[in-house]
Structures are given as C-alpha cells and as structure tokens.
Image (cartoon, rainbow, N blue to C red):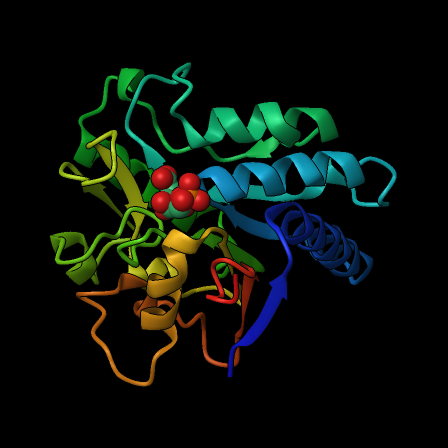
Length: 240
Ligand code: 6PG
C-alpha cells in the first residue's frame, strides 16, 4: 500500500523529501551499506536538490560513498542546461562532494542514442548493486515517469536496463530512460509531484483501474516488498 504525504506547498514538500533523504542515507551507511540512489529531472526535483544542498552538509552522510544514478536523461550535450545531471550537480552534488556520480551519456559522447542507452545499461549491470535504495520520480501531466511516455514503445522493453527514446513528447525529444524492469529494482519509490496540472495524473496513477500504456506511472511498483511514497503538494493532491 502506498503512503501519501501531502504538503501545503512545493517548498514544504522539497524540505521533507530532503530531510528523509539524508536520514535514509545516514541510516544505510550506519548499517555498513553503500547507498545507490536514482535521481530524476524536472522542476520539483530541482527544488528537492536545492533543499538537499541546504541540509546535506553536516548531516553525517558520507556523500563520497553514495552512488548516484539517474532514471532518465535528456540526450543533449553534456554542458546543456537541459541535462538532468548538470542541474543536479549544480544544485547539490558538487556542493556536498559527491563523486560516485553515474551520468547517462551525452549526445556529444560520440555514441548513438541506442549505443548510449546500452552503455548505461552495462554500467548499471557492472557497477550497480542490483537495486536502488531509493528511486525518485517526477510525474508528467500525462502520467509519464522518467522518459516512459504514454503509448511509447519504450514501455514494452523488458530485456534491457536502459532504452533510447527518440520521440519524447516532452522536449527535448531524444532521451535515455531506464526501463520498467530496471526502475522497479528499487527498495523505495518516491514520487515527487507538485502543481494542480498533475492532480489528474496522480489520480489516474493511483486509481484501482487503469492501464500502464495510458498512465506509465502505474507500471512503477518497486521490487516485491518495496515502499512506495507519494510526496504531493495540496495542488497535486487535488486539495487546492
Ligand atoms: C525529465 C524528467 C521527467 C520529469 C517529469 C516531471 O527528464 O524531464 O525525468 O520525468 O520528472 O516530466 O517534471 P516536472 O516536475 O518539471 O513537471
């Protein structure tokens, strides 16, 4: 059963996620684990990243011993402001001293989109731990998560860890996304959702009935026994 946490506004949501994030990392490290986390892109994620930068230093987390991954990335040049990795580095990763940062390849890597997706899949296979301790996901108004969009062929890819998405309806068009099997190798799933324009997608994602093809967020369950938490602001919860 998913937990739903509703905050009055995006800043309160971001502050709560940041606090829980550093607490989770500290607890895992206290137990001798090397945490593996998957970040996401988008505006509420950026707010969360900035909140992590505020609480991260002095939290007791050994940021150099956390493995950072992404659920998706825009296939643009490495220095593009559209890169999820660039945004996360500027917002917090560089500030807290993270250096086990597994960026998805950029379009100036010399790889084709599909080669880049395959390369990331190999990196996850080689350097991953088999499951993310926490997977953060934003949600689109169409119910997409990562770069898995309604009706897209990438939804059906079961035999790869990452897939190239050449036709994203959300610009930029070319992206790399982890597939459902890879995303669902997660012990905790945190949906981060803000704004009234997402309320319908949240409702569709959490409804008893509905299809993954129409609302890809419905395909995210985490691994068996995983915890799933919806971090919403009132607007996204349809309470505004
Ligand atoms: C991306 C994201 C994408 C995002 C959602 C929500 O690279 O664009 O990974 O899945 O999380 O579109 O984005 P907003 O929070 O900006 O609405």
